[in-house]
Image (cartoon, rainbow, N blue to C red; front, side, top):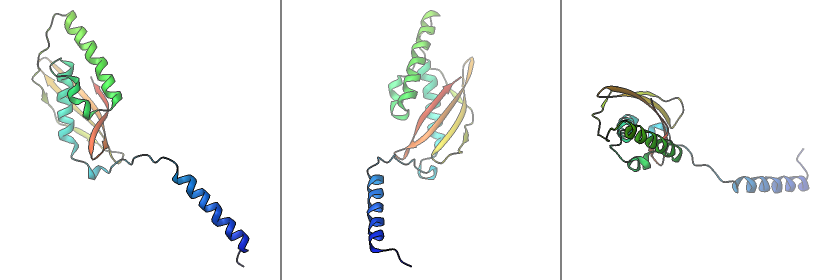
Length: 148
């Protein structure tokens, strides 16, 4: 038994209203697939080296602004201020450290997201650098950074 013409017409109107309501909602940008992004290892190495140099006062934070999220930038900005105060208190001048990186360890559990850790060795100190990279506009951006 087919529905009456009035019910069928009401169904079409309800579907049209539902479709219109869904189409007016803003859509979030889709995270790119990991396979569509460049290999993460070179970016992890470059960012880890840069972060160590930034905290040593040898590199300007602005140089990595394009590769990090706003939250990471603000976090690093606060760390730069603290590192500069510590250097001043101990009478040390900023110097470019010779950074030797250990092997990069990657973990990719979620599509378009890579967690990485690398140990950065400098004269007299080794630091672990942990990063979370997220795909954005066909490139990687650091959405979380911890320099230990």
